[in-house]
Length: 177
Image 1 (cartoon, rainbow, N blue to C red):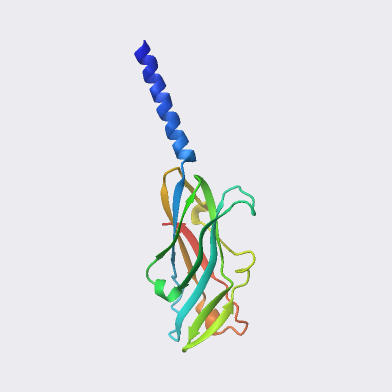
Image 2 (image 1 turned 45 degrees about the vertical axis):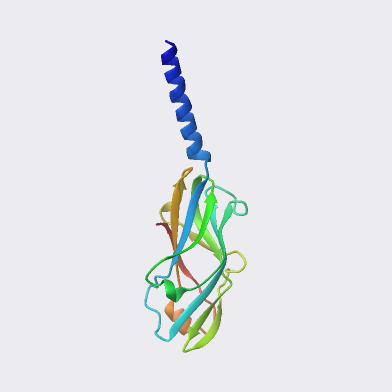
């Protein structure tokens, strides 16, 4: 009888420990970035430099002000170098749970056209950030799990070449890689 009780207690303790681990142990999230433009960039464009001041991820059902956690900051890259490949740009430890969107702050892009650098502003890229929903309604990450989010970021070729306002609207998607 004592052995049965000990076995039952061992099973309960093991199940409780597993549950605590799944819901409370830290998780790890990596962020990769690529630039898959909808159409090829004009051959006169040789560089597209973007500084992502901050990249954040949002917890589902959290407030707009309180639900954001920083994944990476101060990332500058030439999008032309990630046309056919992705680059790891950040890693962070997050709490287990459901996450639904990314946002990034990037006030401008410096684009080299015919050897001349031109500065374009990105509306909302400096104040509220550019929000990017994670496809499929987001994802759930459990304790101890490691996951990678792929951020695809590009700009519309015609908006770069034929734009007297010098303002760009990023084309961005996010998905679990």
